[in-house]
Image (cartoon, rainbow, N blue to C red; front, side):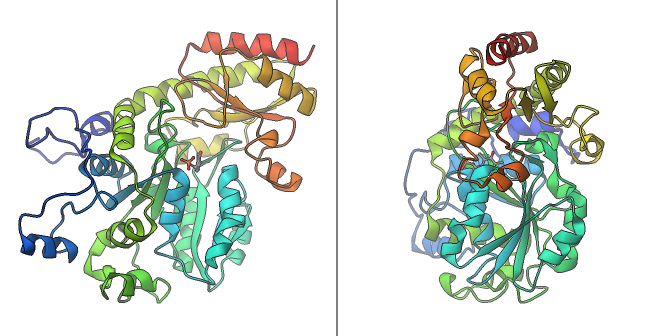
Length: 430
Ligand SMILES: *Cc1c(COP(=O)(O)O)cnc(C)c1O
């Protein structure tokens, strides 16, 4: 490219981060199945360890296949830097790790992936961290939940399982006022439908396991940094802005500028936590991501058709898809996810818990799995599975009540998806 115009999404999803292999000319990004990389000489090794030169040392830190994926996700999200890791849950810990210390807390939405609620309400306590959950539609509640020990606000762009759309600019403004970053889990929306950084987020996390891979083959995660947050503006983030004892006293910010967070995540986060993505896994996600926009367009179109059909079916009590004018979040689509409201929603079946279980067991095209964002249509009864560990109040708040099933609408023919629901609903409500 001779001009510096910004390439479009459909181009970046195929080309960003990868050029033909310099050694062989291989057009597709090779799987660099190696643990270590030979240093040119001792000076080269020293420069790499001092972060004076960027290069490969050891695959727990960086690997060329994994880096191609990180750079591609970074380009799609419009970030300054990105790091891949072993799963979406790893990405969440990796995103919080540079920000937090014992006694610190985060303020998070009540509407999150069930596993994230468990991670934030239980597991992070073992690190001396805590989480306050708030209804992120109640902006005053978000403001008053933030205290002097808060180090981040956390939400999902389109929240699993109910298809709730978060007012990201409003939360970003509150986080900015409090001098803390907003972290957005953009898994369900993908960068094709939503760009949290352009809406004011500092960090974006992904479970690449879902739509970015798109074929249900590997787990993975990513953290993208906008590069815009001033980590040195207060003393809240000493691991970034003060000499870091875990990296021979280097103060990552401001020394490494907009790459401070990303370098910290590699040099300290991946080095010491070891939640590394492997090159084979990165390869599957690189294959999937090439068709992300094509798949998301079909996911959204199918979800709209299926949601409309369900809403008009007498066996159904309610449908949460934000693409329906009846959704309270319909008005947010234009601002937050203008290309569509994703393909994940819940619906309430007349007949409650028992009818839901029967529906799930009677479907033939749909797969009953604890996953989402596959090319295939998927269904799960959240209350008896992913949201099982939660209290009834937490289930209700998370949009996973006992009479609800969650669907992740695939990219099959919409008519076939509807026909399968039709026959299974007949059995479930007979
Ligand atoms: C699946 C998921 C996660 C966790 O990701 P894993 O790759 O399964 O660890 C986090 N957030 C959301 C929104 C998810 O859908």
